[in-house]
Length: 201
Image 1 (cartoon, helix red, strand yellow):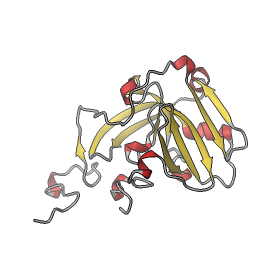
Image 2 (image 1 turned 90 degrees about the vertical axis):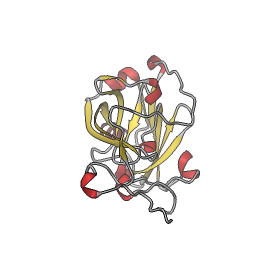
Image 3 (image 1 turned 90 degrees about the horizontal axis):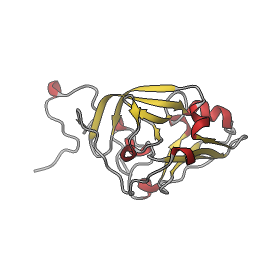
């Protein structure tokens, strides 16, 4: 019997907030990553933007918290098929940080990196215009270490592997480069609504 990828049952039973092939995780927030969970002292944490920018900048914990606060309220979707509705994340918009770093005209892509060495690539249009954040609170509480605390990147319109845990930096580039999961077969962009899970999707 042929298997139809992304089959989700009767349309009338499906929540319209769910992208194709996803299920509602409800009260759970599944934990999936390949790295050991690091313990990062906020007093020693930094986040930097470098590469094709006129003003390479690194922020400390106190400096990033002094910037205008921004909130995301909405849903998140993982490539492993779970989705979680109605989450709230607090931090700073990446637009605010990029305004300080001043991307150059040729900056078309970015590579986000983690303190663990994890990387993922993103197009500039996917992290600007109110689409991406650096966050340290989830649902009104400090972001747990297991979910990327003290600070993670948040790009909620893409699959969640693009929302780098334990984020430490962003390098702006003129060309695209694959990050960890992209080199291992995942899609370069990862749009849940287009079900861009793997290379070739």
